[in-house]
Length: 154
Ligand code: FES
Ligand code: FES
Image (cartoon, rainbow, N blue to C red; front, side):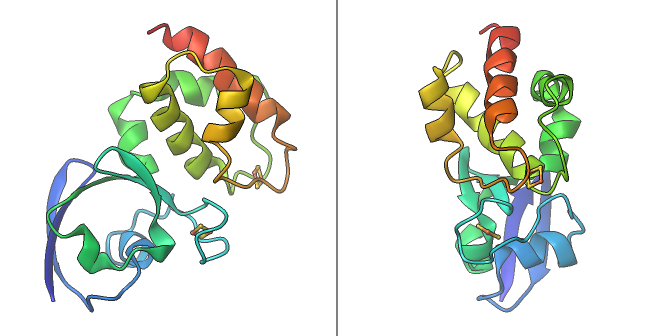
């Protein structure tokens, strides 16, 4: 099936099996390996991308569903510079250990702060509840997002 969509600001057109998982297309066909595969079942958030402004788990989306739509991966977000304050805050607060969950965490944090620039701790925990981290115990991640929300200053 011929599929066209936008990813990180660029138009792409690919001939793909309609049911191929979006995460595999992103990683294998397009080389954006910042999108990780953890559970492969929509539970861990490692494969988070932003689709038309909303975070989704790309491991449970067949690629035909993104025809004509707009995707942003962690690479696109970082290149845009729009999440520099989040990145700096994660580093400053020691919120990164193995790093596997971090692309998804940063995308979800970005989406949360876009919607709610000054979230409470509870709102941050809810906003990141779809992203699992096996290393940090979440405390430092929540602190980092909270500090980034102040810095973002919207
Ligand atoms: Fe997609 Fe876990 S790999 S949610
Ligand atoms: Fe290792 Fe989150 S830092 S899974």
